[in-house]
Length: 106
Length: 117
Image 1 (cartoon, rainbow over the protein chains, first blue to last red):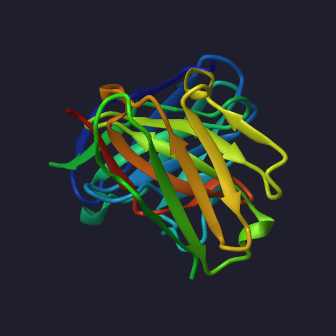
Image 2 (cartoon, rainbow over the protein chains, first blue to last red):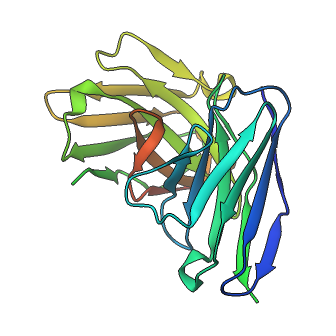
């Protein structure tokens, strides 16, 4: 199985900050990398698919990049409603998730 | 509006079975692969498996293949997850998800399963 490692596990930032979340795969996943947002008590929600495609209805402050084994989710200007846990997910081969980054407001 | 609603969760004794349902609406159910994901308390997400449109292809996470069975009824727009020989490690929230242009472009709200005596 491909292992997905997210960093940091917890990130604290201020409203308006540019925030970067990282995801590293144990092997090349050919950009088949999605990002999901999960707010407390809710189901996950798709934000970004295939590295850099913004899902319909998701604010443009969210963006994704990367290739090979290294991927990034960026929030250009952190908003209070962005408090959540963010999971990366690869579907290049049998699907696996990262362990998540918990994003908090300072 | 795409809607997925899981049901059938609850408290079950170790070693028993349970069947979850996922009712789909707002899209053409029989055009999509569907999948199941679970999340143990305080833990991350685990892909359980997937089923194609006509049930001719069903894939499972190897460690769960002998315990879980995914099926669907396109006439009823419903996805199922049959779980057997349940243990405490199966305590989780179980989500059904649509596999569209990308996996899990829509999720249900989840069904809680607690395995305990």
